[in-house]
Length: 216
Image 1 (spheres, rainbow, N blue to C red):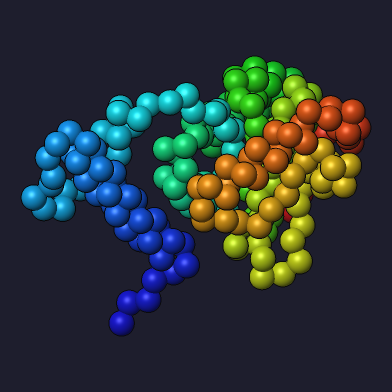
Image 2 (tube, one colour):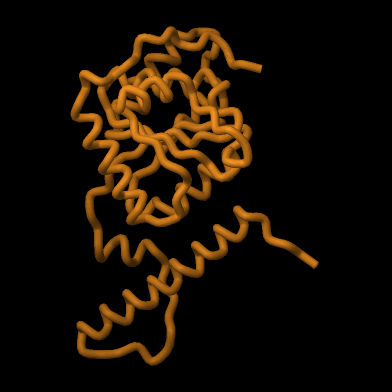
């Protein structure tokens, strides 16, 4: 007998909810046009994105690529209709010129963080050990952007340890921190809460030295 993992169940339920939402929206659109659907029709999301096009907020997501890629993929699939989600693909995966820290720092600042309004840190079991996550948080604070930490379900089995620089700013009340949520409206509320907190730049604590290497 096959048993779904928690992540597989989340993905399946997300697809089912999305299909129900799409069917309901299509029915409403057809009703407004003076006709009604003869049967249930599933329409790809891009169809609705065209009709209901709106400016998406750019969201940068920082995470442990090796451990938590599946959670980033799920986050992107779940919330990409509402947000323009992107990551540090060239740095986090291929380690472009990893022998040149200044180059990497500049790339993080100019190619990724600068184009967003908020950084979301997906906090798994070992996220706090990754130097690139620390550098991305550092650059987020450098630009005085909003900072939101989300504890992944995979990290809630024991004591949650967040990246030190994120912890500094949770303590100072600049950063916002929540446990994983699977609801777009609740995520939106928490993103707005993080954005509101970021208006108080005087609360930023970016004094910690940047990590020089990954922790074992």
